[in-house]
Length: 312
Image (cartoon, rainbow, N blue to C red; front, side, top):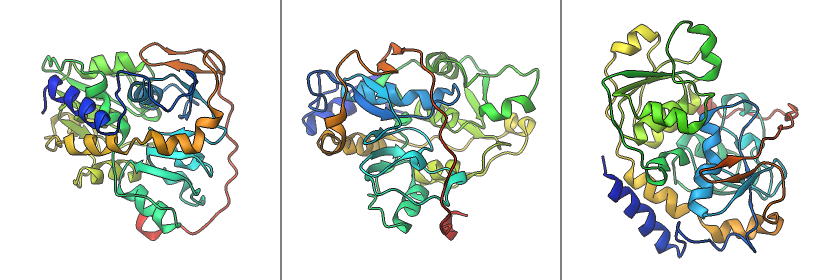
């Protein structure tokens, strides 16, 4: 696993190659305006809340939440919320929305090959560039992995009611708290996809625990992006004693994902709707968080289309 200095070098070299330093304002913004960004926030969930942090760090700009387009979509199984003229960078599909037509968006990268197969099956151009942007956290927040010999349990929030009287790493806590607790562990057992991704990104062996709420599509999408086929463990007792799969080397994927973050492409799509600094709801400052807000519920009206057999 690369050391902190190597991670920092990857960011600086990659961003310098595209004429955008993570340490200086990018050309994305105009007069300090904020990046329009969508992430899922119907419920507190640390993985989804990483989206404005990652995008803000890479672009060196503030972001603001919006469900109006054009906008950028990054972390999460949220492609179903994309519209024409949006930009997708590292997002994935969710099994509940395979019947919805894929929007004709600009795709810079996707979470994994299953998402790419879905988009291409519907005529959307999608490059073979994979990676959930959460894999960049070690280079954006190079925390110290200081294992204490413990096994951390990270459950999808929908699985929490099924496991009582267990000391969990709560995914509904602030992402800084979740990250700090994960970095204390020598091993992670997780039914949360981002529990798996974050742990492996920091080099921590992780066992995939079957989720009672989620089908395996999004997990397979991530694992296949790393060139692996992994099966979940059915019970927590078995997961606690199971041998984790080898931690993947994510360095090349990080390089490719960073290189795909083209501010020029994003500018062409959405910079004209960037809001002035200090305006708009949910303004997010990297490392500081966002202004409290209430998210409107999304209407659940979808027009059925064929379900790609490869993804069923």
